[in-house]
Amino acid sequence: MDLNATLLKKVEELTLYLLQQQKEIGAIKEENVNLRQELDKIKTDLNKGR
Image 1 (cartoon, rainbow, N blue to C red):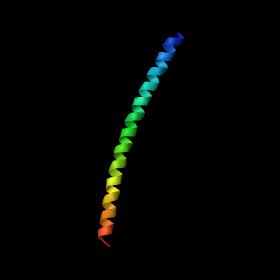
Image 2 (image 1 turned 135 degrees about the vertical axis):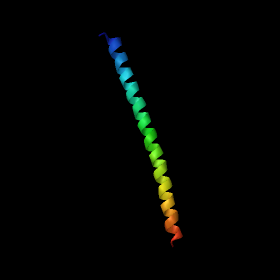
Image 3 (image 1 turned 90 degrees about the vertical axis):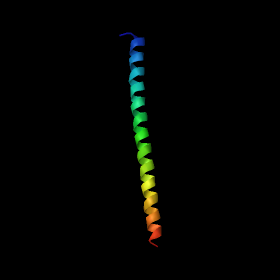
Image 4 (image 1 turned 45 degrees about the horizontal axis):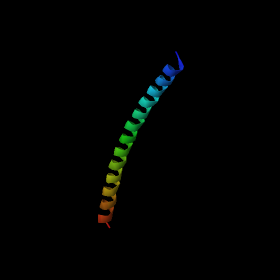
């Protein structure tokens, strides 16, 4: 395999890795939003009990 083919293969691998990482980051951001909403609700409920 020549150098250009090797480099192209590596670029393709890194591109797929980057896309997977972006997908995981999106899921983590969504989970973070949900957890913040849940925390805000808990705080509100605690403040009502005072």
